[in-house]
Length: 277
Image 1 (tube, rainbow, N blue to C red):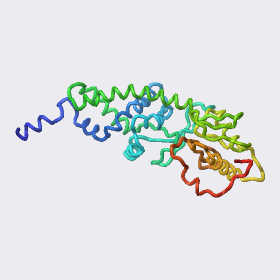
Image 2 (tube, rainbow, N blue to C red):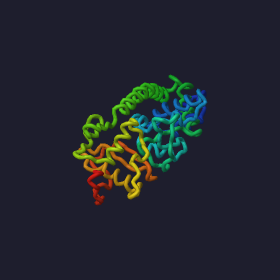
Image 3 (spheres, rainbow, N blue to C red):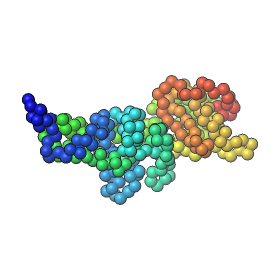
Image 4 (spheres, helix red, strand yellow):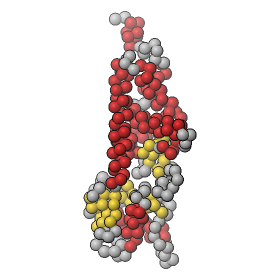
């Protein structure tokens, strides 16, 4: 086989713009299934002339499609996506977000494509339309993308189900559970902790709530809330939920964890008051 003939065999088909091959190579194969819900979100926003953030895609859905933390970092550092943490309350009209560090992805993080991300993602999808069935390399990818669309629908439903189950605070039994697993059982009254859990339960467990503790002139409100959060994380029979402050001293967040112990909890020596723990 001559050198020229080899170039002809492996060269892109003439009807495929060369820049599309180049753009496709810029997005790793493992990330490409996540383009489906991200592009769909932009499309929905454009259809009704809405802000893209109203259709921002949740972290959980993209993780269920196989993305890792490093994938998110790659997307952010390449300017393909933007991300913020959702802080929407049940009473809010529309969704609300707060910025985080560029490579920090806490619970509640949502993503939208940037203009660059839309361009590259759209070009990647366009390859499938132009070259469907004509090139085996892209044909196989086309099948994976079709499968990803169906997977995306089922994953969205699973995420919705997971959110409807989630944590549960039974104030009568004074038991906190996650998906029917007991996380913490209170043997005696813990007024501050129970106040926090009651508000989370009443608001159907949003990612964040404002400080629900009643003002006390003799106590520093931010310090009291911090101590309450520490107590919530202590003595969990199944350490599945981690509570933390929002960084302002005026709010509480929660997240599901899989590790047996929370970082730094063992080093905390400050004891809680009986009324708090």
